[in-house]
Image 1 (cartoon, rainbow, N blue to C red):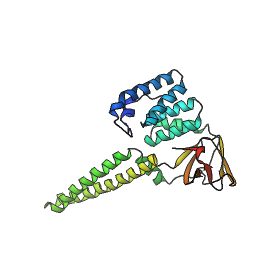
Image 2: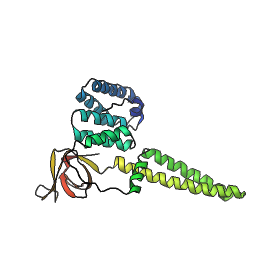
Image 3: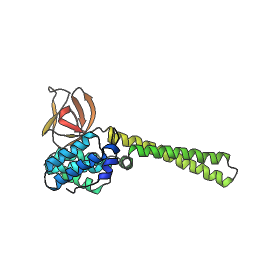
Image 4: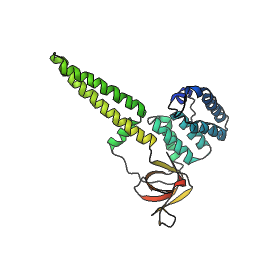
Length: 256
């Protein structure tokens, strides 16, 4: 599993609370300490160090990727899959992340025939994840303002060529603004309001109702990726990639 040492991205990539600059030094030191542990083969200590950084609020594809590598080295496949999936949400086109994710998936027991997404949906999700939600929102706002300027040229210019140019430029920029807003909303849904999860229990039965007395519908094992469709108390209704649904205890999974 290839290690990544990227400090700047971790320091600047969306610390959720507080002033990132004021704690950049300690975070760098902790991250490099984790790198040293990992390089020396002390994967447990590397994992603990990086998880402390993650739990403190830092988010980056590189941090998630390295946490996934540490989990994989410790033969914790559900943990590896969870953090590889989280890394892919931040960098969907990264070859190393996708390769390691594919390798980790081969270590799982369950093999379900997946219902493929529509081509348009796959590409819409991919493009949405190319930039963070805030960046897409910024592009949307700037494009909207520029479209108003172009529209004013169309409305108030006396020159025919300028009017035509202003009109089509306004249409193009408005389309870009609406698209960027849609990408921003989708990115936020995929990254921050994920309904995907990884099963962490060695095995769990999908029930017909949200209680232990429900009928067993199927048996799944650790590492299986599921979609959460409903929640009642301490139970989640999940959907498998083949379309089957059932209820499992909340503690049996971890949301991506």
